[in-house]
Length: 193
Image 1 (spheres, helix red, strand yellow):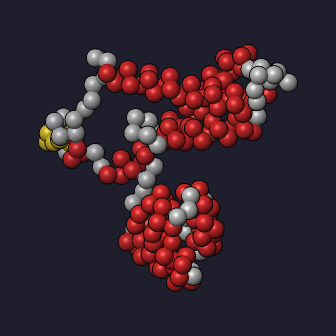
Image 2: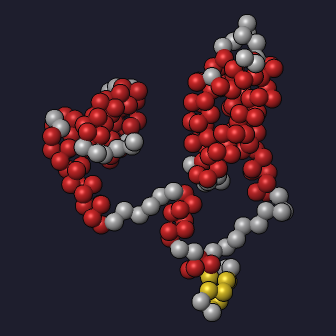
Image 3: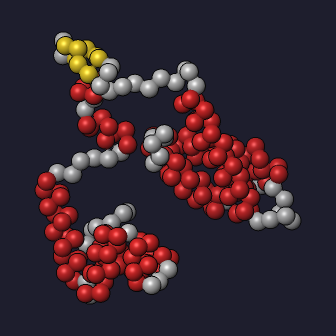
């Protein structure tokens, strides 16, 4: 197999590309729909830089991380430069008038909430779904040990670092404890898939 192909198709490379693309697509200057393009651009960058990989100087993982960090920096710098250029024009939702149902209305009134949700792939939860979710959370919280319940409440109110500080442990330990408690929530259909 070609060296370039082995670098691009390595499981580590595939995973890191997906993680970085997911992180970037969540930023305000990107969109969820950019995910596939970001993955492809990162693979192309690695393809072009693969000739620089020297296994005697470092591991594949270090090379991939370094190359992708460089690509992300370049991409963010490029997008920032585009926003500053004169060809970039932001559109005001209040100041831009469009014809809608025979009348001129501000663009912000015309763009439906569902359109914004579709673009960033968030969908409103119905009152019934919200009720079911709250009921499931209360059910799981009631089954937790008192110290675990206090731990979860602290995380919700304070966050990871403040909880770690108040308990006198590292934030990494808090993450591991949260992973154990998360299993109880996932057993009841809550949490990420």
